Length: 392
Image: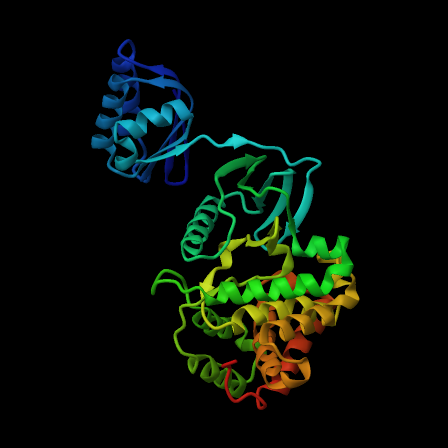
């Protein structure tokens, strides 16, 4: 048994076997160690990565430990065999018990996507893994799994993670996607399919937007944007902030699904079927809130950095405007010349989100950051009096 203390948490590593032969000895070591803990220790973690076996006698020791310490105990790194013992005996209902994560290397693997929270690698022709940047990303991974399952049961084709792995000091979420490619990578490889791919892509976007969630299960995109105004208030006049809030508040509640980052690296083509990945931004609201994100991706990021699309998405820089035009025309079924009013609403909302992304990250720094902030402010100033409402 090994013990360590950090902040308000005591971690005890259990090694070997706990059975009838040594249960009493384990109890005589374990309980005094816990009972003599410093007064500021409020959490107990049992690391069982080195535990090969635990019998009913060992489980009785843990029950005494729970009675002595309280319920704020978690068990981590359980092997499949040890986890099954906890699960079959009901311990997983009494305490938080986490399985040991298998380790996976992504060295030499193809990068097929990179976002704010993680990088997606192709491990083999059938498997991809999203490795999260933050070392403490387990809550985020589990939340994304939860959101993906909710969307799936509502009829949205999405990849659902079937495993969580350790990749070095980070965690990854594993998906099985047989012979899948992102729309982005297909477009790079087969530019002659531009019209076909963009038509399929826009149709899939409409399919996602037709699905509805139950009330209260996802955040409202409208409310998220209202929160953005607090972050970017220093870059807006009082009149602009008030007007933007009025426009957002006038939007009705809407339970239709919004992905939040529908750019083509987050849409896979699996056989002939489009499928969504990266579900951590899932919310509900009007189509506006997905379309504005695409406007940011394909137009605003590139406005002051002409090489942005090639650098971050690998697509030719000159494709930004044709992609946006095709998305609009295929989504609304009208030529872009008839969509000026709709485009203004999307562009205004996109400028708000772009300004938020800059203000809340290191993207605001340096000469490029300053230029982008000025660009977003200029777009807001130009559009805010032209837009009467945000309903598309």
